[in-house]
Image (cartoon, rainbow, N blue to C red; front, side):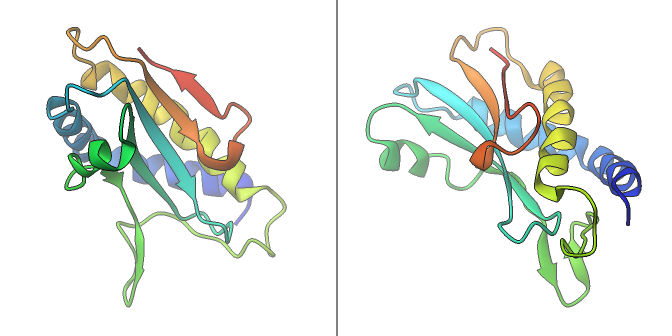
Amino acid sequence: MNSQEFTETLKAELEKHSASVIDKWKKVLSILPKETKAVSVIISPTQDGDGVFDIFVSLDGPDLHVLNKKIREHYQLFSPVHTENGIEPYIPDVDPFDVEFEVNDTVVDIVLPWLERLWAEVKDEKLTLPVGIYGDEGYGSKSSVQLN
């Protein structure tokens, strides 16, 4: 799979999950503890560089462990896993030794603008906290964006 095929396939698969991610993101924002000082949405590609990644919410504020524990049931916005039947929910994966592109950078370069676009449907005008999207480990040509 080349970079263009990977990009097109991942974009198409992400679109299938837009409504679910929007719902989960709204849920997390609706249950933010009052102590929350900032909200980060993290795109975390696997260390293997095979195209698999997680998207999760992390809160900033006093006593991070307690703060994030309050959203524990809802913090994962998108989390594909390897199963007997393949990756579920499906996203394209590659053998990182068989491709001519940096897979983790490409994942963040695709997922970050997708999340940025979804923010228009997630944002609550009453929310005044800083909200940002970050590519874990600095992955991506643009590894972060501030939304709020």
